[in-house]
Length: 438
Ligand code: AMP
Image (cartoon, rainbow, N blue to C red):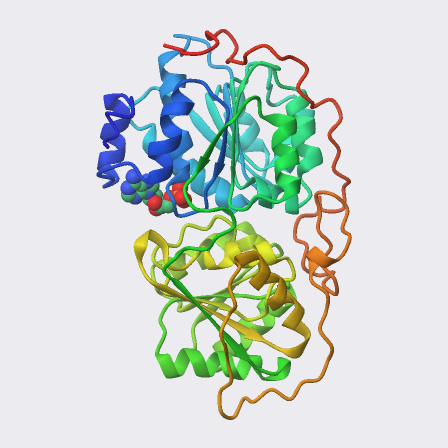
């Protein structure tokens, strides 16, 4: 299978070849032909599978083939949960559109809105955005959605978890009824399926891995260790094994800061990445981690979403997530692109229920280990996992963890008003034939 046989044009193939892609990834093979036909897609795909090119290439083809010679309304919108993912997707869009006459832009919060407004006013074909800032810009009339032909929801599960459903529905209410919708998600909970039902019309399901399964080449290792010994144990693991590039997950921003400080004190170069860090600090930490000028990146779940960190050999769960699906996301950072990886979890007595819930989701028992000198003595009772508590729809409760939510939108109640399909007629993009476009 080649990019050409998928129906992509030369200008796009040239751009991906320059990126060093020789053949389409499985998700690209499966999704691109359907997207080119104008169909809605519900795709199960994690970061690292090549999903960004999977949706960007066919959308760029559509945009460049149907472009008005003078007029440039916004016709394609990619929504992402985090700023990092937005920046990353935008970088890809720019690279893939190098040889087609398409203008792209990115907008997200935490930075000055003025340059974003100026860019939008100058005319953009495809925009990558986080929902909150985009709504603000729409309120200020800096952008119109009246001509949107394609809506892409990237990492929809995370957007739901961060409480963005209400914002997304509001944004959609300003868009034409007739449009193509592409939804990507790493996990498929009931809530995600419900969100998909409200947005997608007769979607084609595209799957590259069994639902909620983890990459096959990842080995899971649990170390039973007391809560107050975890930092010491982490330092020992890194030093004894001489690890050079490790992503560590903590459940809270405060926990990420504390661990980072202690690692640095122990002579291990590290940086933290979470929602309280400025955009500049987050970008710098990620860059330093990628080019290996720091060994350890300590991240919270939300900040780490969508980060493109290739071939990561080790991921450490300093604390287990209380939302079991987050475990799948976390370890999606290792064992990518066919390389083997190791997912290590430090589990104290309070976290045994979290482990049970994760094992249920994975349908696999995680092997527990005890290391001499770190034998567990904690007796604190286990906390309940999020899937056991009755959280409101769209935002799972994170018991005992009020510090973990980075999306300030998380408290908003999701709603689905005005978003149910109203027409049973076939959908196509505005002004485009219903089935085949070209
Ligand atoms: P994504 O899942 O979209 O974040 O992509 C993960 C990584 O795979 C990125 O570094 C892409 O540049 C790369 N990639 C995407 N498509 C291909 C391909 N067909 N061949 C090789 N690498 C790819």
